[in-house]
Structure formats: structure tokens, C-alpha cells
Image 1 (cartoon, one colour):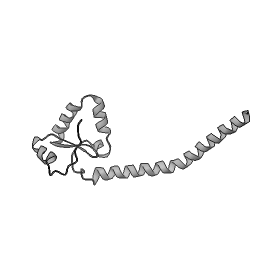
Image 2 (tube, helix red, strand yellow):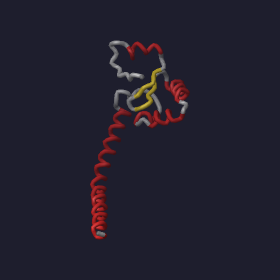
Image 3 (tube, rainbow, N blue to C red):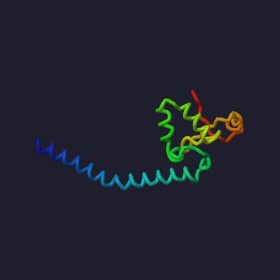
Image 4 (cartoon, one colour):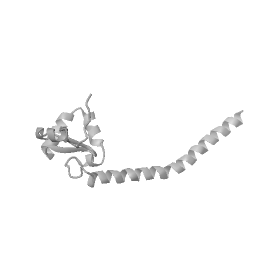
Length: 118
């Protein structure tokens, strides 16, 4: 019985070694694809010309850190003072502070994607 347990443990560890060897190239491919996508979003995407923090161009790290800080309203006000009425806060997120843009964004014929607030 001891031999069977030892053999089973060896089998499981050898399966993980094989998996790790095959997993590394897959992870490298996925990481490369993410970096290419993030660079595209940052420099060539539809929001490429919208100003904002550099980290917000490539990832949502700025938004997560901002939400966790507990100072989101103040941080957004500071961003708008620095960058203007339209600020990029993530790869696909924009903050707008100009009330004149409300009909443009939320109008019936608007093509902007909106998020519902429950």
C-alpha cells in the first residue's frame, strides 16, 4: 500500500511538471497578445487622442487604485482641472465633466455606449 501511495504521488508530480513545461509558451503567447492589444488601445484605438493619465491608456490599474483610495471624486476633479472636460480613465473608459455634452452622449440618436446604474 505504501508503494501505491508513493507511485501515485510521483505520477501527480510528473503530470504537473509536464503541464508547467507546456504552460509556459501558452502564457507567453497570452501575455504577448495582451501587450499588443494594450498598445493598440493606447496609441491607435478610438480613444487614443483623449488625454488622461498614462497608465489609464493601457490598463484599468488607475481606476482600481482610484476607487480603492476613497478619494475618487477629488481625483476626478483634479484630472479634469489638469486635462480638460473629457478625460481618459481606462483603456475604454472616459470621464466627462461638461454638462453641454450630456445631450451628445445620452441623446436618442447617440452612438456612445452607456452603462446603466442600478
